[in-house]
Length: 189
Image 1 (cartoon, rainbow, N blue to C red):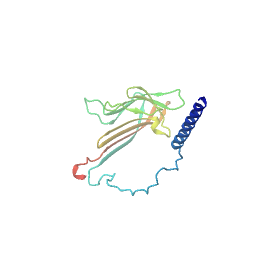
Image 2: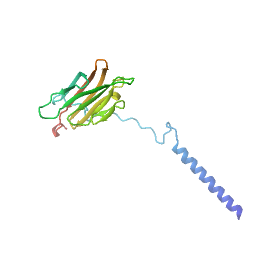
Image 3: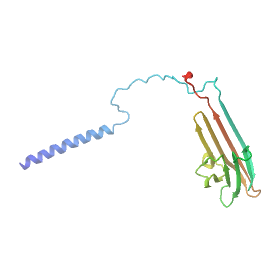
């Protein structure tokens, strides 16, 4: 009787091994092996154009300015209305010395919106940044704002071009873009 149990366990073990090997092989088939015959590629059909019709009104406003400030000075990039908070103001607090990179400590007032910054920029407080001189990878060393609202897009970027501790002057490049695309109506579709 003991011999029959050994034979039965041997058959069960061998069956489990074969099933496991088949399962493993099926899961690890090479990428070139396919289980179904290859289908011919379907032709590409464009039903909707990704471009905007020329007849519709479209507007993109782009501003690029170079701003020179001394420590303690500020500049309004966009004109402010008297009695209201500034729309877009940059203030240079000081030039950071003692590091191997040129850097400036700036405060940006942008209509109360929270700004973002690249990983090389150090944010010290709300919209207050220590910005190093822009490297080849400008996104890592700049302060920026991006907001999309349906048919419009607003983008702003500030990067430090130079900081001279001897003269106490910084040079910032400010780019602002505002784009407006037409709203699609039911008649267009």
